Amino acid sequence: MPSRSAWLPIVVIYIAGVLASAQLGKMSALLPLMRHDLSLDLTTAALLVSLIEIGGATLGLFAGLAVRRAGPRKALLAGLLLLAVASAGMSATSAAAGLYLWRLVEAAAYLALVVAAPTLVVAVASTAQRATALALWSTFFPVGFACGSVLAGAAADLVPWRMVLLGSGVITALLLVPAWRLPAPRDGARSDGLHPLQAPAGAWLLALGFACYTVFEVGMLAVLPSYFAGRYGLAPSTAGLVTGAAAGATVLGGILAAWWMRGSRPTGGLMAVGIAVPALLLFLVFAPLDEAWAWPAAAAIALNALSGVVPAVVFARLPEVVGPRGDMATANGLLAQGGASGSLLGPPLLAGAATQWGWTAAAGAGLAASLLCLALLAMAAQAHATWSVSRR
Image 1 (tube, rainbow, N blue to C red):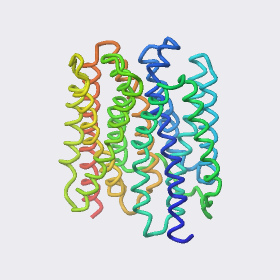
Image 2: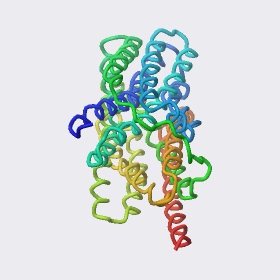
Image 3: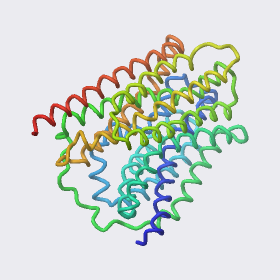
Image 4: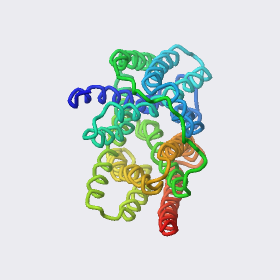
């Protein structure tokens, strides 16, 4: 494929990833309206946000093998189709149980998309384009969450939330047309060499640390619209805009981390700041400030901008931890499962803490997850150093 023409399919693949992660943002923005119409408590409703990660949390290690057998292009098309059908199904159901069932379908679609898409990016990109294309791909989650939150919140001011869900399905279905023209990799069906339980100790610790990070990050983003709507009486569009801006700000942290690592600087201090400072800022976000909602909103955006350094550094350190002879497919699957597990647990954990003991307790839960994240990532670095010495 000519070098220039490769960017069109790369953009199509990237949009598929953005649409997948937008399913978390849209549900977060629509949560206050859905809670009111369906009489859901905050913890139960927050599970609707995080349930999309259940596939990655339980099957992330083995999803790569399934995608290899089916082919990443077919997996991506199937994911888009299921995503469109699930959105339409959720818009038509009138019971909370139906929403959860369709959300499980979205979970399967989401997993297929986020596993197949980077495989296709590598297949269609030239050697010179690959690093840039994968750097672009790494931003799909915050960009998608931000788009889903902002657009769904704005649309909910104009039409009922069920129509917003239906519109999401229509947009996803439209992407099937250009996605159908994506090239199929020639040799994507082999599944040799995947040993899910044989990853190095450092990779397991890195994945566990990343899980704690996503408990904090996704949990905080999931409850922000309900927090701003409940405490400050913001409209869904405004609360969604704040949440979307906060989610999108994590891209700035990724850019900062990329610049920092280009100079071959040590990343331990950067990682510590990116974990500890946002956890402390969360107490400012959830502090009672009467009608002054702009300060908590600014704090939410700032903490996300800083915390964005964490996933960038984690993904950059993974090849080091695995080593030149390690199985990167296994390690990437393990990291994906860790991130999905944290994303699944984070929203109900922070929502449950807020429901039982108040919003300060939710900030405390975020701080606990962050401290555990910092400890695990430090242990991962130590395990890698010990492993490197033993290999000499």
